[in-house]
Amino acid sequence: MRMLALLLAAMLAAPSAAQDAMPPAPFAYRQLDDPEQEAAAQELMETLRCLKCQSQSIADSDASMAGDMRHQVRIRIAAGEDPDEIRQWLMSRYGDYVSYEPVMSTTTWPLFAIPVLLVLIAGLLFRRRFTRRP
Amino acid sequence: MSWRMWLPFLVFFGFLGLAAYQLSQPKDDFIKSTMVGKELPYFTLPPASLDRPGVDSRYFYDGGPKLLNIWASWCLPCIAEAAQLEQLKETGVEIVGVAIRDKPADVMHFLTEHGNPYTRIGRDDLSEVQLGLGSSGVPETFVIDGNGVITYQHIGDIRPEHVPVLLEELRKAER
Image (cartoon, rainbow over all chains, first blue to last red; front, side, top):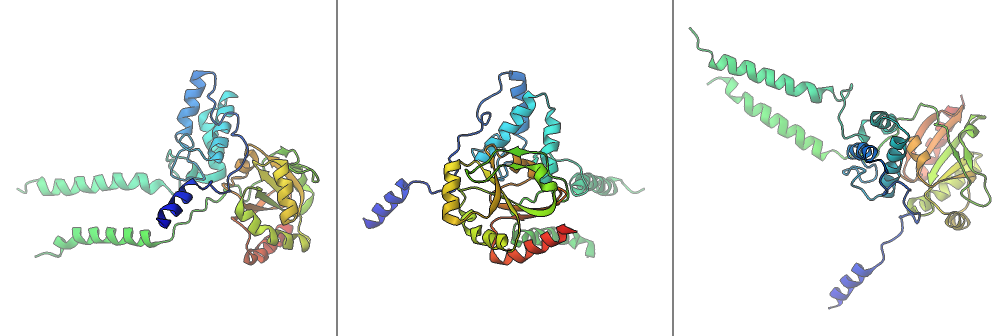
């Protein structure tokens, strides 16, 4: 019974600090008025990684930093910036990490090269196995 | 039987071993800024407290290396590093603060409680400067040389063992 009371108390306890008291950024939750621009912003936000939560895109996260990143994306799109430019702007600060869209670079090229290589090896093996010798 | 029969098994167990090894390695959760070695982005921030001026990026071009501390009154590890910042200030280091998503009243409360090592504190309500620096959390501390170039990033709270490291980085930034 004491255990149950303790559990209930723990459930009702107020979440502790380490959360800011500021309201979310103006465009964290507000969509852009132009539906075309909003669609471009949404598409970009879904491929940018939340830095606080790490396994979510900024479109999915309620972390205040993700909200601030959505704000940046939306005001930059509204100002006429290209989505790829905004991605580049973030990648020049946080590296490949921030983008869910893989790019070919000096560290990622094996990801693209190895599958091609494996398919080639498999093709060669099959050819050798299935060609009848005279 | 030819030895080749064992080749697929070898490849398979080799892969298994590699995966097991990688899983047992500790994961580095820090996202390092790729702005280290580059110039500060241009920014101007209004003051975050009543008794310190705001921060302008041009302030970092006066020839002397400084620390730029990203913090917030709502951040618990920031309380833990307060003593180390005080210690750095006492050795003559200039520390410029950037308060993330913070209210002046909360900032003042924090500073009276835990000390004020800052010469200036900028108010970054939209994390714009934080994003501009490639910082992904609070607290973080950057070493900026006298020409506005970021030379070092410390992620997380400054513990006593990090103080000599920061002093050494500041010394290096002086050249």
